[in-house]
Amino acid sequence: MQPYAQNWTDVTEFVMVGFAGVHEARLLFFTVFLTMYLFTLVENLAIILVVALNHRLHRPMYFFLTHLSCLEIWYTSVTVPKMLAGFIGVDGGKNISYTGCLSQLFIFTFLGATECFLLAAMAYDRYVAICMPLRYGALVSWGTCIRLAAACWLVGLLTPVLPIYLMSQLTFCGPNVIDHFFCDVSPLLALSCSDVTLKETTDFLVSLMVLLVSSTVISVSYGNIVWTLLHIRSAAERRKAFSTCAAHLTVVSLFYGTLFFMYVRTKVASSINFNKVVSVFYSIVTPMLNPLIYSLRNKEVKGALGRAFSLRSWKGQ
Image 1: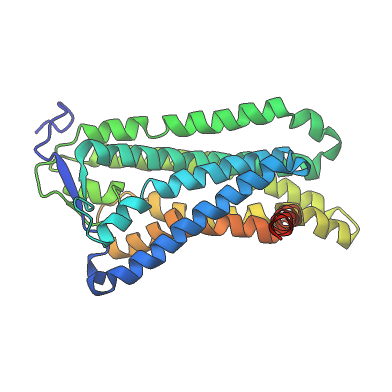
Image 2: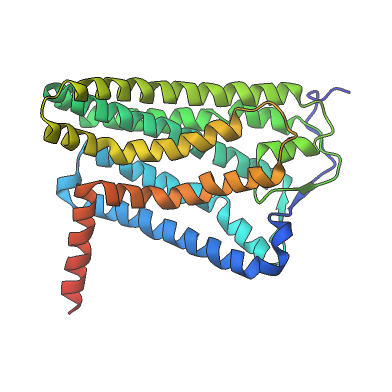
């Protein structure tokens, strides 16, 4: 068999079973996930609008935060609407074409990789702000921010090119039932009739490279931040300096914790149901929690949101 010799497949459509074991409670699950999805959209749109309309927040840290919020909206929108359609039995709600499946996987991987690099860029911003405050304006200029953001999106876009190309070279000759709520790598590889060793190894190396590069930048940045904070004599100044990066550090911990567990693996065979739970956490729960973390742990964002809602309430009277 020549698994990579031709782009040929008998399967033209996949069926995603999603959470098949919760058939009796499907309306409850639909309501919960719809609420979380709408909440995610509203939260992230609020962050984008508040930063755009408040001139006090026109700073590099919040520039990257708006990029992160835009990404979170697209990240959840790639998978959740299709999953919701499957819950309520919309005609064709569980079906997805072969091309659509690979496209969904490409976009999801692209956005996931981009988020890794955006979080690294935000860590670098905090490092310069705390460790080299006098050079902050020169090192993190608007030109630098735009180039960093563009690089994050570009590298993120290139990340899935080789993995998706190799996936497209695999043969899928049946069955066509994906035991997941979106086209993730592991359940797709489990359906392939080809030898998936090369594809699996490539996925592992690409995932490891993205995670190691971005997490190294974050680790080095926060290592220097901690070292600098330890040399600040005033406890009040230490708390003030750390509060500016507490929200980012919390988001990083949530996001990277699940990604390291989920994607740096080499075996297709694993607990599918447990993978679904982890996938729900990083694809739905984390994007919903991130704006809450930034608004609750960041006094400037919380204050701007409070002023925006107070002004809207005052105008409505």
